[in-house]
Image 1 (cartoon, one colour):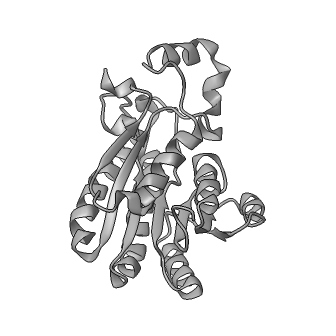
Image 2: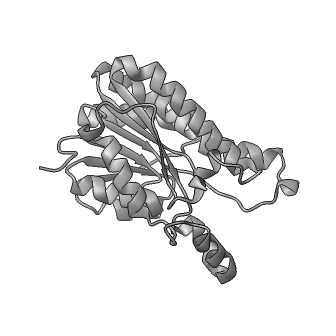
Image 3: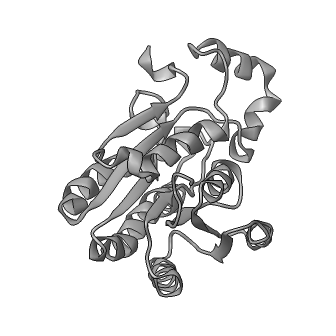
Length: 244
């Protein structure tokens, strides 16, 4: 029997990168997985996988979240797991960041996880059980990245702690993962600079970049009953970069 047998999971940004690795692993472990994403072509590919259902979702839309949570609960009878993974990044220097940049970044990376918890946690609370996993970033824990991306991931860190204390007495656990630099389509541009890539690897104690499955395996632990007494926790997965 898999670690997530008979569980229903929603994974945002589930059609590519880290999210896709989570979708594949969770379904292999027995879960019914809703891969929620805004990319319709990618969702169609995801829906071809066993026990995976692609559903369109704009995480920055409160109405989209409300509709998705209700549809999943009505269709499958419950929601056991929510992974707020969807997000965007930016390489803009701080001198060029304006209000529109800030609002777009915070609406997706900050409001997205908040709205997900707002609409999904009550269904979990009604069944007195659920696990929410939010994806922040190592930049929310160290002095790196004076920009709107770090700000958005700092927001995820703060609301995760608050959610853990808000929903804990209702049986809902909320934990946060802090990935370092992971090899995904979002970070693909890093590979165009061998010098930059080399510096990053050299500065990482484990001497490599992370892989999507490194994050997926940690998410699996927090989603499963193996972590039943863990909430409000922060797990950094960056090869030791932020430990220095």
